[in-house]
Amino acid sequence: MIRLGSLAGYPFEGPRSLAGWTAPKAPAVYAIFARNDIAGKPQEFSVIYVGHADDLSQVGFPFRHPRSAAWIKRAGSKFNLHVAWFEIMGGLPSHREQVVQELLAVYKPSCNEEKWEDSWKEEWIGEYSTAVTDPLTTNRNPNSSD
Image (cartoon, rainbow, N blue to C red; front, side):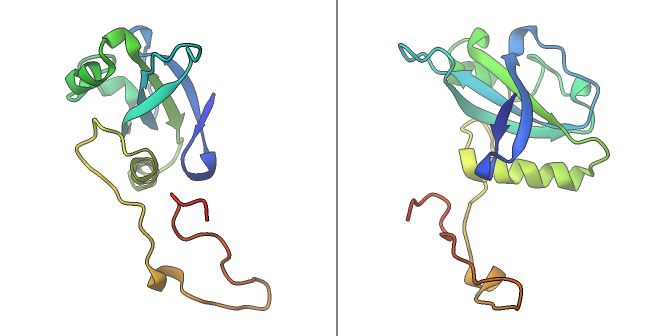
């Protein structure tokens, strides 16, 4: 299992080698990884594509997916490609799309044509005060350590 997303909130199965993987018949979000060949770190990966499907077995895995040529080019070999998936049983396509958008914003995968910004606008939450909560204290820029 690998955890992905902001605050690593989604438990994905995998990663597994894409070349030998049989996709389950399930609604899920999936992430394609390229294995980084860094000496001393054999299990280091980069997220290069994210998507979702009503039925993973119908997506065209391992290499009939419309973006698979871009994956292979980015990874340098089809044997450097890995996959992880997060089954969302009973979830709507809009729920899976929301997870994909978050992953696009967090990882900025190079093989996705769609890009998603992780921006923050004051009017989305603004300042507030209630009897049971304190004002927002987390940084509003998720890429900053301040």
